[in-house]
Image 1 (cartoon, one colour):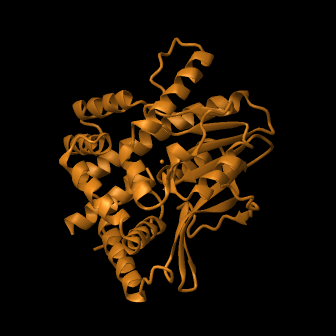
Image 2 (cartoon, rainbow, N blue to C red):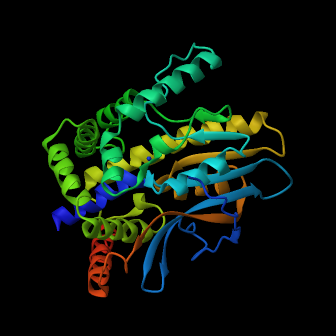
Length: 347
């Protein structure tokens, strides 16, 4: 069970917490299961018994009263099919402003000019494409998919980095541990493990890279791993910070990685709203795990309401082509259900 929990959390960190097709944008209503919870940003689409898809929502918000700028919550998985990122790129290029995720992109000094900051940011992005987050890039490659940082062109005039640097996150973690706030020493240890994993500085990294090579050499194994990812991400409902069954260190880590960074996003969004025109379109381009909390902030703090949404296919599995049996698919699905119930504290 411990290994299953580790794999489950790894999926969350890896792809939810990085030839275009002219796909018509289909706007759908937002359906809530209860007044207290936001609708999911990830869902599973089953096409008979032959195909399984992971879909990600892009949701539009408008002022509850009067007129004002549109706000789009653009949830994203950090690995996906190339067409997925092509469609997301075309969508983001239509926005007035895109506030995007990227820990470590902006290591610039506060007294730099805006032009200098943008130049430095773009250089940092290019550097990260070849060095940082190598685990996610290798994971994507092993599954025949693309890594978000490689697939999206961030060198756009309407793109603005809106995230904390690694050193800023480290300072937050250390300060919270010192003042006995939400971050525990266990959470700080989990943060160090995650950093080592993504920076290639741990035994776990070596073992995971070896496993990825084995997976990437077997098409059927690739299909089974994709099913695991789709089932895991597609069944996450609401804010995972509220899951009582998460290990304390992991829960503390998620609290900081999501809440603290969402504080920054909300602050910068308010600044953009104060200076933009009424017909502006502002996109918050972040991992899908951030969306539930951001949606609550838009509704409660900014008096916005959800209007409609677009669903994009992130990646899929052809069950028939890879001869995945119904027993195999059901076994993976039931196993994911069991782990999620445990994480939610329902067992």
